[in-house]
Image 1 (spheres, rainbow, N blue to C red):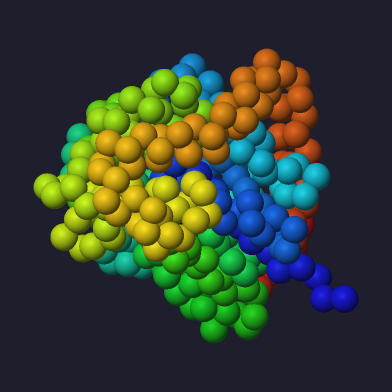
Image 2 (image 1 turned 45 degrees about the horizontal axis):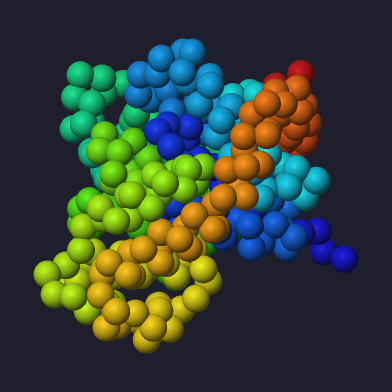
Length: 331
Ligand code: TYM
């Protein structure tokens, strides 16, 4: 039997895990856990490209890890770990740095955005961020990377780096494919349907977390902005309602079409109320499991330890291969 292909993804522990992260990435992770060797990281090293308060950062990273488990990732089926626990990520990053051009990095949209937002802290990490991401993915010989649409450019550069290296040294890396949801790959803010729903939006009404309590979820959907008229339809000139329809569909696995059929003439109030309830229903058990897990730090660190051990064994093989191909003296 052919070995299962590898699927890899990660989330940075910044802000909150939003229903956008869920719709764009996690929902797909849950669907394919059985079909691939799946590896999911907390990308804590990536989060260091912006300043973090140490105590809060540690707490948040652990909370994100517990949320991975609470939302349904199963450590018996998948490798779940902290990126910073496996030193091969940064080792491969250095090696790949030497095969990546500065011009490629300065052209990255996210680099340009983040440089603007953090004009007083345009550090080397910000520029080198995509190479660390390429190292994450290539270390595990990943075939598929389920992400939201905003990560597509980083996947393209990862492929370019892999192909470039393979051309120079012969087949070394599997060239990964992005795995982007048809629906839900880009969820927008509840307050501004032209802006991506961001984990770190300063406006608390813009995003909903996957462990949020019911009252707060209902309140945020009630306050969500809508379009001018009052029909529930998926249309380009109705970005707010189209976004809410996408969220509704992602939470319930119902098609947008069937939702439009049901809610077309029922008005926004009713539509937003039912959407809020669907989100509450989807995430109430996640919240409950999360609160239990956060009371069992011993279990969390044991799962993390085992995850890092499994990941480390896989990553070691790739780094050894790369070093051999490049011509470094074997230890
Ligand atoms: P991050 O932490 O910003 O986001 C995590 C995942 O959620 C997706 N996403 C969205 N999807 C739909 N609508 C949205 N509004 C939305 N916002 C975010 C993202 O596309 C992503 O899939 N660099 C990555 C983390 C990373 C990574 C990796 C991903 C590090 N190494 C290796 C894949 C493979 C990031 O910052 O994602």
